[in-house]
Length: 157
Image (cartoon, rainbow, N blue to C red):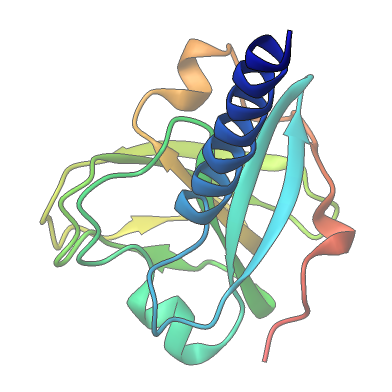
């Protein structure tokens, strides 16, 4: 009986270790200062790393080797504008959704790794959300859909 209880304790401890490791993996690499914000689009939850400073927006997802399926990066701009993103030094193929001040998707574009081609918002955008390539299309998320949870993101600096 004690042996069975010991096995249960080991299993419980292993579950705690696994949860802890998964949480650690969801945070950005050491040396970067970013916030994480939970968002939802059409019932699809995601976690976005927030780039709200000039340095974080400039760095973006450069030099990352991979990006988890429901994880992305939210760019918060100081003001609405026809902002552009590119893929210089970014090896992970991405899709970007440009969002207006209310969080409504203006346009979505796919971006090729290491490309210096600029991808622009089709109208003034306050936010851009980068996700693994095809994330939006696989979930049938299109322009006009609202992203929920943006009020939790830190303001742009």
